Length: 222
Image 1 (tube, rainbow, N blue to C red):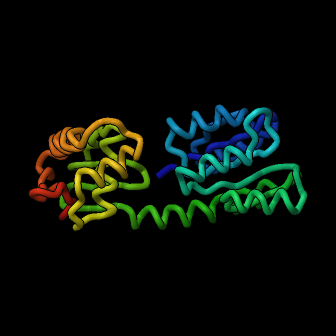
Image 2: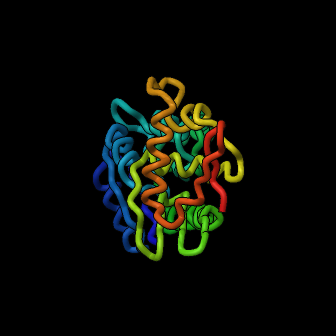
C-alpha cells in the first residue's frame, strides 16, 4: 500500500525539496502552501502523515495541528525554523508526533517518517475486518467484496465504522444518530434507517452482518 503524505510549507523551494525526496522514496505526496489549503486537502484526500510548517500567514501550523487533532490521529511532524523550547512544547501539547527544526538532514527526516508510518501500518493491519469475501479497512475507509471495491458515501462509511467499532452491541437509533450525525443534527432517526437500508443494499450477500434489534436499533455481527 502506498502511503500518502501531506507536505504543508509556504516556501516553495523547501516544499519542492522535501516532496521530491518523498516521491523518490515511493510515497504519494500532496502539497499545500497555506494552512487553509492544507485543511481542504486533508478533507478530500486520504492522508497518512503530515509534514507541517509553523510560520504561515493567516492559519499557522499550530492552528492546523489543533484542528486536525480534533478529528484525526494522523501522524504529524512539525518542520520549522522555530527552535524555541516553548514553541516545541506547544507543538507536542497540540498533538504533534515529532518536532524537527531547520536546517535538518533529509535522511533523518525520512527515517522519522518511516518509523511513524511503520507504526501506523501495523495498527492499520489490526483494523481490517475480514469475513468471507468481505474486507473492511477502517483506516483506509475502504470496503471490498470479492476483490471489488464497494463505493460508500462518507456518512455510510461512518455509520458502518461506528457499528463495527461497537460490534456485537445493540445500538439504539438515537445513539447512532448522536454519534454519527452529531448532537446538532435536526433530522429524525429515520435517517438512520435510510442509511442502513442503503448499506445493506451495497453489502449485497453480506447485508446480514447488520442485524436489526427489535425495539432497539441495530448491531454489527459476523
